[in-house]
Amino acid sequence: MVETYRIIASPEETNKRLEDLIMKQLAQEINARFNELGVEIPIEEIEERLDKMINKFKVPKEEARRSVVNYFLKFHNINRNEFYTGGQSESPMANISDVAEDGKWVTIRGKVVQLWDNSHESIAQVGLIGDETGTIKFTIWESSGASSVEENKSYLFRNVVVNEWNGKFQLNVNKSSSIESIDEEIEVGNTTVDFMGAMVDIQSGSGLIKRCPECNRALTKGACMEHGKVDGVYDLRIKAVMDDGAFIQDAILKRDQVEEITGITLENAIAMAADALDQGVVLEQMKKLLVGKYYKLDGSKIERYLLVDSIAPVFSYDPSELDELIAAAEVI
Ligand SMILES: [Zn+2]
Image (cartoon, rainbow, N blue to C red; front, side, top):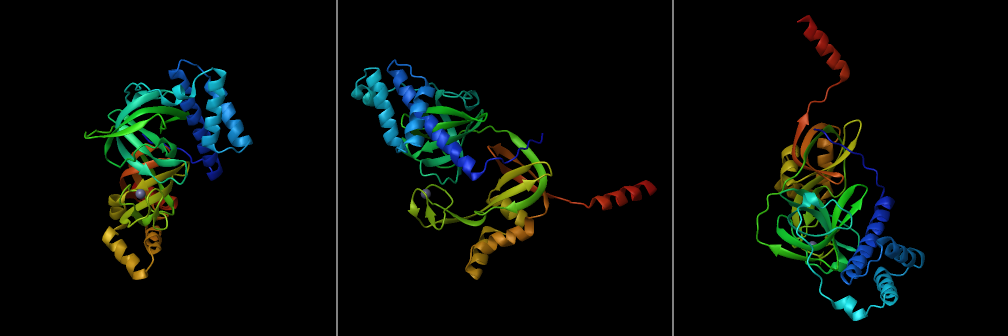
């Protein structure tokens, strides 16, 4: 089954969406803590107050949070210490396929399938976690203080809250959450999709890249967002823009597929960059080789990305040639 969709979010929209998410998760956190103390405060009411402080009065988020919490503490006559200390009970374990419910608190046992680049200062890590039933995006907020995660390792994400945005769900790791590493191999189930179309562009951050040795994030100008200047580890990656005439699909190719489709190995790429004293030559060469050609891809679709498992070239043809071919075949 071919499943496709269009990229619609502009950078401004994405930023707006992030800001909304941050607000929403703050509100959920506050709501959950009051719930534990037996006080039901509608999330909308909390969000409204946060929104006013953050967006209208430009109060920093942490300050806004404190102030909104204080307001409700006073209103409901709750002691500050009780609010900030009381231990919280653990949210129930859930399968990833069962968490499609906005505002639900769960504990998830899963494997981190992918970590994605992120450039928002409020976010420590963002990626994809999976269990036997499927995969879901997660966001570890900087304010959570949770320990960081690595790709292909398994974890318990305790007390995380589900957010829904435009019909898509994600897990938020916030102040009430914790992450525990577990020594367990998890077989991740996913939805495979395929896509056939032309590669119309390759985005920056492709070609020969360097990753942080600690967290595997792609480095920007030699620095990791989390760990600063580090001695990066070389890798190959392509962020391709595919177009099938009706839809545009972003696709991410890992080193294996990049080597296979370009014939440029990681060692070749490192040598090319050393010769030219410029890492950019690798990306330029890859663009020359791939852009404008047709490929058939399959992999798993996560948010707007197709994480490619396999890629193969497809013969492209000129429609007029096809007519000739059919005519020739009819003669035979
Ligand atoms: Zn790092």
